[in-house]
Length: 587
Image (cartoon, rainbow, N blue to C red; front, side, top):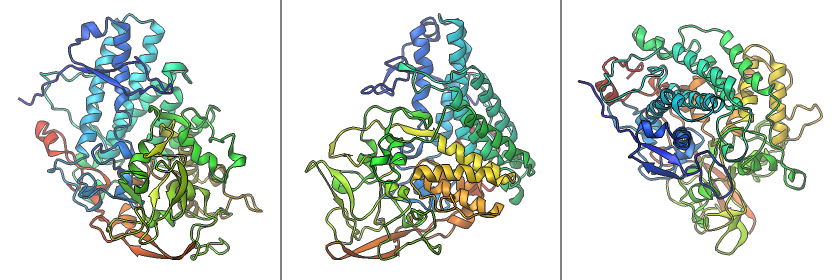
C-alpha cells in the first residue's frame, strides 16, 4: 500500500493577517498541533489564520532564502556569482552537472514544500464555507487561496515541467498515490485559469494589517510570468524530450510539441493588462535629485511601500542581507560573491557597453562612469559603507593584501561583494534596521516581459519604449537621440540580445538569471565550460591601483551544464511512492 501518514497541524500568524507594520514580524508563527478542522473552521480568527499561514512559505524558494543553512540561491549556480560557503552541497549539483534523481538533492525540497502548501490550501477551500465569516470575506479569502495554490504550482512547473494537478483533492492517510503527471500544456492552462479566477475576486489593494496579501495585480503579474515562460524557446518548440528521443509521455511533460507565435501574444497581452491598470510604476524616490544617478533604483528595495512592488514578501525591520552578503569587515558572513562575469555586463552611464566605441570605458579606472546600477548592485574597491565599529562610513578595500576585505588567496574571492538591496547606512555590526521586503514580483519585470514578448511578435517600437523607461530610472543618460544608449533600428535578434542583457543587470540577485538561461535555452552555450572570473586589484600607492582579470581557482568556478539539466529530475523517492510519475527526459 502506497500510503502516507498526514499529521493535521498548522502554523498561524499571531496577527491573524499579513501585516507589514513597522516592528511586526509577519512571519512570526506559533505552532498549534491540537486543533482540528471543526474547531478551526468554526472560528473566524482561526480560519483567517489558517489561510495566512500559507503565506509563510511564499518566499521559501526565493534567492537567498532558498537554502536556510547556507543562505545561497540560484544566482550562485549561474555566471553571476559563486558561493563562498565551503562544501555547499546545495549548489554543487547545479554547477557541476550531477543533478540526479537518486540523490537526496536540495531541489527535492521544492517539490515537497509546494505540494505541502497545495494540500493545506485545498483543506482551506474545502472548509471555509462553514466558517462564521461574511459571504464577501469568504469569496476574497477563496481567491487568495487560489492565487497561493497557483503560486506553488508555478514553482513546480519551473523546476519540473508538467506535474500532477491535484485540483481540490485533499490527500489523507488512505490516499493511494497513483496520479500521473499532467502535460506541460495542461499545467500552464490550469495555473492561468486559477489566476484568472483569483484576479476577478481579489481587491486592487489593501491597507493596515492586510497589506501584503495577494491582490488582483499579483494574480495578473504571476499569470504574465507563467505565460512568458510558456512562450520561451525551451517550452515553445524547443522541447528537450524531442531532442533526447524521450517517450511521448515524457516529452509531453517537458513542453509544447510545436512553436506557436500566439504564445508570445498571450504573454504580451498579460503584461499589458497590468500596465493598463495604471496602479504600478517604476519607483522614483523624492530624494533622487539630490543624490547620485540611480538612487531611485537602489531605494526601491528599501521601501516597504512603493509604486513598484506588485507582490512582495514582507519582513520585520531587518539587516538580513547586510548580515549574510556584505563584506567581512562589517561582520557579514559573506555567503556569496558576485563574479567579474556579471560586473563586466554593466555598461556605462551613457548606456553603451564597455566594449563599444565611444563608451568612455577606461581599463585603468574600470569603476568610473558606469551604469549607475553597477554601483548599487556590486561593492568594489573603495565603496563607502557604514562601519558599526566606528559609527562612521569608511571604504571597503578589496585590493590584494588589504586587511579583512582584500583579495587574498582564498580560491573563491572575486574582488567584489554584493550590495544590491542593502543600505550603505547600516551593517551587521551596527546601524539602523531597514524596511527591506523581498521583491517577488516588481513592475520592472512586467515591463521587461512586455518588451520581450513585443519583440518576438515584431513590435519593436514597444520594446524600445520599455527599455528606455527602465534605463531612464536607472540613471543612464538619454543622449542626443533619446535612446539611452540603445542602438537605433535594431533587428529582432539584436533587440532580443538587448532585452536579455537588460534583464541580467536590472534583475540581478532577484531569482531570475538561473531561470532565464533555461527558458531561453541558452544555458548549454553560455554556461557549459564557462570559466568564472575575478577582478584582482593591486595597490601601488594611496589611491593608485592596477586591475587584472583572473580565473577563479575553485571547484565551482568552471560550470557544467548538460541538456537534461534544463529541467530537474523527479526524486526517485517520489517515483517509488508513485510509479505512475514519469521521469523527465535525460534522467
